[in-house]
Every structure is written in C-alpha cells, then in structure tokens.
Length: 247
Image 1: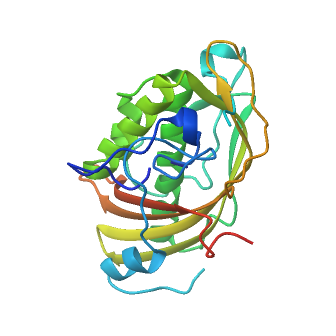
Image 2: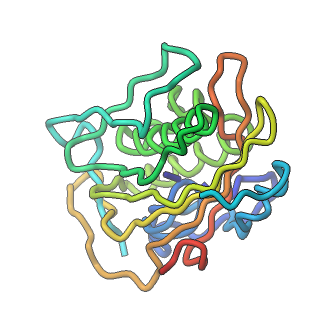
C-alpha cells in the first residue's frame, strides 16, 4: 500500500529486515508489518494536506508468496473505474493468496475518485513488484515519480535482499483527500496489516509469529497529474502506530 519516507540522499538506512521485519508500504515503517531500507518517516497527515493547500475533514519474518510461487493469479480490482485518463494502464494481477482491500475509497466527486483510484494502483503496483521480484518494475514507474519512485525501488529491493515476499490481506481505509488544483493533490490514508504475513521466497514458509509492532500504518502522500492524465505519487511518508489510524 507501501514507502515510506521518501528516500533522500544521505538518509541513514534502517536496519536490515532480518531485525525489523518488512511489510508496510514502501516505505518504511517496519514489519509488514514493516519495511526496511530508507529512513523512518515521521510526517503527519496535516503536513501533506497543508502543503497541498489546506486541510480537508472529509472523509519476525512473515511470508508472502511471489506470483510465480502460486499457481493462480487473480486480477486486482481497483476501487473505482477510471473516469478519465489513459486507457493503456498496466494490468496488475495478484496470486490468489494475496489481496489488498480498499474501504470507502470513493467520494462521488470525479476528480477525487480518480486520485484515489491511482493511489490504490500505486499500492498494488508496489506489491505486484514485490511478489514478482522486480525492483525496477515499469508499472511502479508508471504510478510513481521523483522521491516516491526512488523509495519504492529501494523498498522493493529490500524485500528481495531478504528473500521475502508476502501473503494475506492488507486493508486500506479512512482516505482523506485534498485536491489543491487541477494537477496537485494530497491523500492521507490508513493501512491495517494485521492479516498480512511475510513469506520466505525460497521455502514458501509463512511467519505468523505475533509482533510487538502495531499493524496500523498512516500514509501521507503527494500526487501530481502527469501529461497522460495519471495521478502519480511523488512523495510518501509513513508512520506506524500513529493515532490517526490505530484503534
């Protein structure tokens, strides 16, 4: 759903996943529950919403199996059909043991729904790259640019370095969107990783060992609309256990 804080030059790296456990989208929190690599971010939802022009009140190693590890693949279903934008979007499919659920992901306003749909697609694109073992995924680059793309690539590579993928269900909910102008937006949303587990890519072993880390992650993102009409994520920050999302 990962990321993140976006990786910035000179940012210290987080300890290897072996000690912090992956899972959280991209981006770093730790343990898919959390992710390794770049720096742990601590940006609040208000920060990105303000940067975008104001606030809006709307509103241990686990395993995952790579797509090649499971026989059947199922096409992911975006929360809403794109009402505008390119029709040649990359197709994303997940193995049958992996699912991302997006709850209350529509507002009924066309522009906001287009933004939210592309946020969902960037989450799916990163998981697709992790499952397939492709740190340089063209699909990720389709939905991410700038710092967000750099951090996503590092995030994906961290999974590969640890020989991990994942399995289970990740729930995304409570999206808070602010459209600043015709090509700039910010979205803050929550993830519940309590039913997602890291999986050893080689052995297929799934780790369901209880974690002392919160399974709830808050993501703060900035997006820019591309010339092709895609709402690309350009900045991402995440914080695990933040009260916005944790019960």
